[in-house]
Length: 313
Image 1 (cartoon, rainbow, N blue to C red):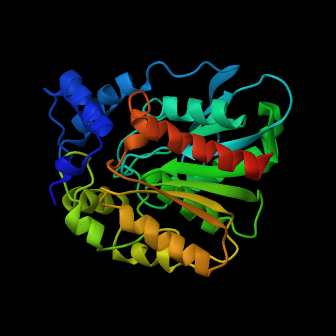
Image 2 (image 1 turned 45 degrees about the horizontal axis):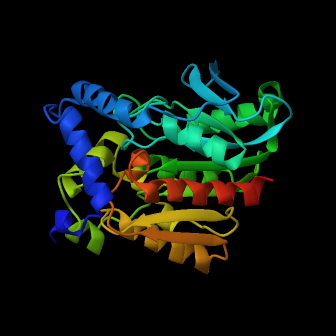
Image 3 (image 1 turned 90 degrees about the horizontal axis):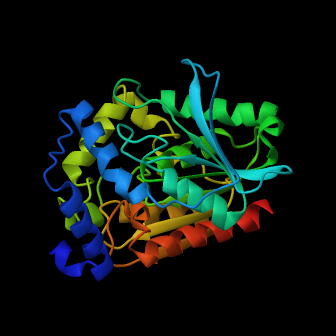
């Protein structure tokens, strides 16, 4: 498939802007420290002009492998607020709170809920299930100490993009039947367990960092070994999905991982989980970052914020 010929004009404009700003950069996953620096620099432009909030504060909590950095976004200074616990994407090997700052600010402003970003440790230095255990530590801290940050731990949702969507679903599976209760999930174009799919074969491209060789790199960096694939927190499509909280799922027409989202929605529906699927055409993986120039990306955030209000307020 000629992916570029199918792209929405606004998606093409976003790619052109990135090329103009960072076209001389070399992004090579085999040199991961350098790739992380390039990724962070490329995201700076797309994170500028984020909305102001009543409070944005960085702090750390104790975790199983040392301190876990969190960032709190509060759209209001007074009263207890529900919260979205947001997990950034980046293939488990890239990204941090700064690369997804604008996205988290927008969710806070548009939903009225607080947002708590979790700066989990990255692979391959820290492999599965370190990230899930740090996210669990953040949820446990919110259950015990959330009031000190103005958060009502009885009203929590999980959400993320790409690898962050996978981590959100894996965490929700781990937290079924335990406290704190998760009230909803925002799952933006995640990888949920398909080893092969039509979208992986026909949508592969060099524009968005998720061609099959990239996915293999991320997977090998994240996993300790083949037995990890049997863990239902990882292979979410083979998990018992009954009893999970309601979900908003976004699938993108030209995303290599599109069919993961479609398969997940089918399985969630069969399991009796309330689920809303939205499909956006003409756009690539990672496009939430481009809300400055792509109105549909802002629409996807608005849809997630609407879902949050329904679950948390």
